[in-house]
Amino acid sequence: MRRYRCMVAESTKAGASRGPTDLGASGASNEPAWRPSDLELSRRTFRRKQTRRSVLISAVSTIVFAALLLWAVAGSPGWAKVRESFFDPEVALASLPRILEGLWLNIQVLMVAAIGVVIVALLLASMRTLRGPVYFPLRALAAGYTDLFRGMPLIIVLYLVGYGIPGLDFFPRVPVAVWGTIALILTYSAYVSEVFRAGIEAVHPSQRLAARSLGLGHGQTMRRVVLPQALRKVTPALMNDFVAMQKDVGLISVLGAMDAVRAAQIETAHYFNFTPYVVAGLLFVLLAWPMIPPTDWLSARMRVREQGGSIV
Image 1 (spheres, rainbow, N blue to C red):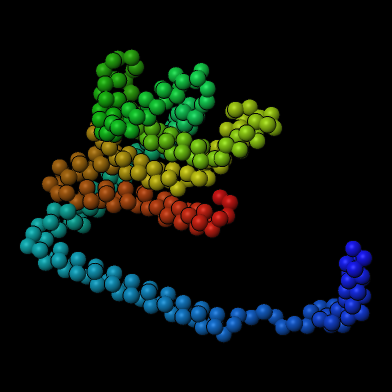
Image 2 (image 1 turned 180 degrees about the vertical axis):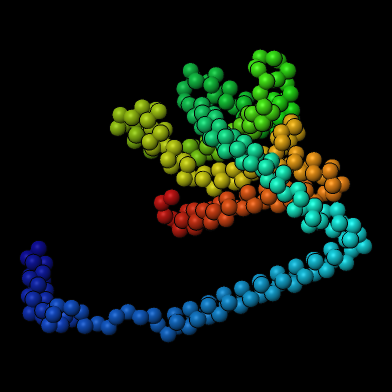
């Protein structure tokens, strides 16, 4: 022990006698600022060249592929008839106002259905995540609901709801768009509830236990602790479901609703031309397009953050 103390004392005196040899008069370091090495600079230059080369090759290959596809389609024997029947500019301009008027109904149904799907799906997911034997009837009801409407095609649900429920004469005359909205909510809430449930179960149980140890009840724990984390985890999947519902909202036309698809059908019968269907399809693509890039960007961002080990 005495030898160790002597060694510490000698090292302290030596350090004090040397003093700060790497500091200038102002106390700042005189060492040169860090700069990348020549090897690192050469690597960065090589990567930039590779990126430019990849972009150029991608652009050229895309142009060549598009040109070959256009040549193959335009050179087919029946292209003249197809162009006249599906891509008539005059028919497209003449049918556009009526199709746009029907598209507004699709947008209204979409907004109402999206709100209803979120509410019903959260309720179903909460019921399926309840613990304890006393809640078994609720869990069984929620599981049966999701299994039923996930397995049934949407168009059949539209027929059952749009024609079956009004046939019971329990309600006064209701617009068919309302029944179409209800059918969309019934079907998509089953899918979205499973997405919510996956997000809730992905939250570590310690989060729930910590919240309960602080005195929060089950509802407060779900609202303040579990759901905010679960929603961040499943946001990309929810946005994809919303994009899918944007397309399926056009199926309400089978009930006779005057939406974009029904308007295109009427215009097709009027002009004896299929161009209105192409116009309606392009309008639905434009309706879904604003949601597709943010969905892809958010999915890529969250994937990078998860793979990097950061907190999501």
